[in-house]
Length: 252
Ligand code: F6R
Image (cartoon, rainbow, N blue to C red; front, side, top):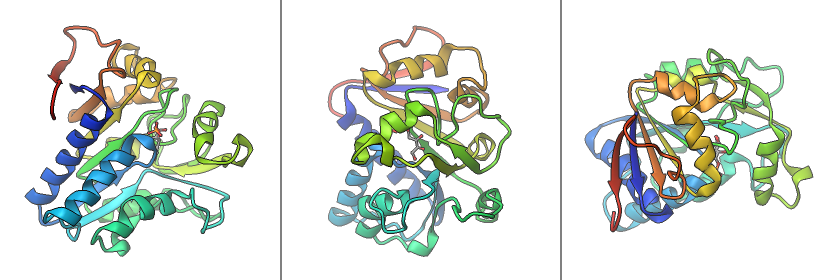
């Protein structure tokens, strides 16, 4: 695992947006795994800016989002499809037929999503956030490392953290469909981003706790190509020595 520490959230967004753009400019076709959530809002803003003000084109891009809520009307502003449309897809030249979300229809085999990813040639780069409880995508503590895309009951901590996007916690859906940990681990490269002191404990656990299903993000230590991008607040419990750490303070 390579760890990159930048000054603050703005620099983190810049770093990840550049990472994304390097992929797009270097490839005729690229398959990304994407996350929603506040960590990536600034990244998508920068990508939209680059599209509008320079020559960044999303025509070669295919995307698979990590997760989708169940039990929301399709026109609800907080479905992850609608959040991604608003923040990115509607603002760039991506072909929306190349943007995918986990299937949420009842009576469907959710792991059909894994088959779709495989058929697309696999994910070149998977961008991930992390929950305060160490979840990645919506794989909550206790989830098997070998699971494919599946339905989950959201942990109380996750519904509490996400109530900021709804009028009240009661309105946060209780279920979602998420890429599984085995789906995520198949990506050729993974970039996990975290910002703010609320994430510092989860980052400490991911990097130093024993690898365990009780701490889902620890599975990433078994992947050979992972970059963790943190701002200083999220990196406050980093210890010296164990990881290859690059610090980029100042303009990024
Ligand atoms: C979102 C997702 C989640 C978030 C995580 C962090 O698609 O899969 O795992 O990445 O909950 O959310 P934020 O960025 O809002 O702190």
